[in-house]
Image 1 (spheres, rainbow, N blue to C red):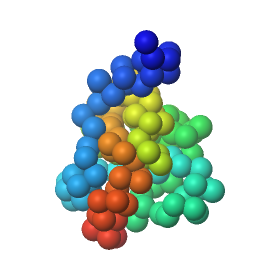
Image 2: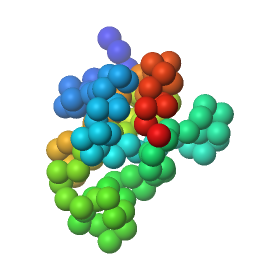
Image 3: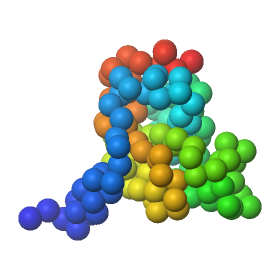
Length: 127
């Protein structure tokens, strides 16, 4: 039997249409918005995601909710495709599920997170 957080993570992922790293350039081409929720120190150590919005995890819901006074200009409506990244694709699954809970039905994340994206060598295609 796994931990409680393993169960919550599995439930979150069951609700998402997660992207493989190689699918990210196609998602960007169709208008998806990449969101990097990694802390500044982690971004500095691992590298940046070209064209990604950096939104700290603690304010993600407020910035992406089109009904919030603190929303970003990109948060136009519930049909925005948000693709959330963390380092390895764990926290991003929970964050994307939180966006689903807000009614943002196209929110998702990437299997393996930033590290898988870098390993797949598709970062250059996102510039």
